[in-house]
Image (tube, helix red, strand yellow):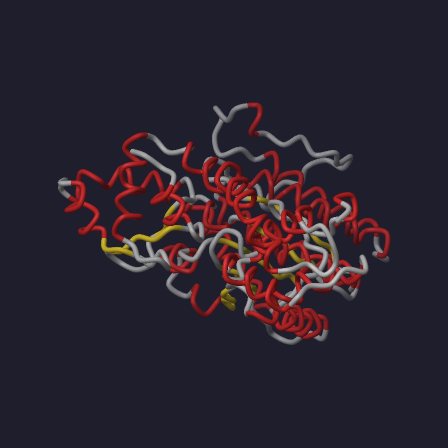
Length: 398
């Protein structure tokens, strides 16, 4: 096949040519947007799942839906070492810029921008580094007495309430999208939950849509006891066989190429429906296939190259981020887990390594912060990356 015409797109957050298997989530978000537009109560939304299942792609698609409805939108990617104050200020600035040309009262917009500027410039302390200070391109002077206390929970409630009021004046809403939400610092998670709670109580048209790893609900619950009622949680999983096949067949058909059923069966067997793997194997198989239709033999020939590429870019890069002690922990998990990389007891990891569980806590906590593992439930640990245990058992050495 002509590699120039190859339709598949494996990449971090890169939208595939066919967003298969996510119709239900897209339709549900349309309902959320319509309900909020009509003044109906609605919860903010949290997407959870392993890496490679397409959370970021779906998050971006939901943002596109909001934009199509003329909402103001902004997006941030959380980092464990960065407060929400600076990136969230930038996201809301973008959202309100999208709405301001349609607002009937420019002075009201300027009033909000003054509050936003005060919020952005209010550092957590006098010794805040210059790189942590956002210099907003806002001409109006910073307001005083609103969203400028330095207490993020107080300031964020006031800021989001004011932002939602601007959107309500225009007859639409604001949607703030937070990727890697599990990395939001604990104090900031608490502030964000408090702000969402206030927005819900007042019925204001601002919704937060977060995406993160499977333990994100536990992170939110540890912050505020009411978080399980504050958000609607949607688990994003691998594609079923029909959806995975459609993700391959539809873009190929646009190029006049078809698949034999045996080829689709072989691709599902090696990818197990994980969207990133579907794109990765689809791309390499296309490049190896000599003629149309693509056959099972083409999949078998291409699979070693796809596996080698994943071993370097998807698995290997993550493994290299771990310290020697952390790699020992990962390899012990791999040795103890089954072919599905199920969660394993942390006590079993300690026994396998001949260590006391308490002595392994620093390695485990560091791996969680790096996003390589998560605590599936109390006393257990699991990989955040599908097939990572398989990779470790066949490639990695401690």
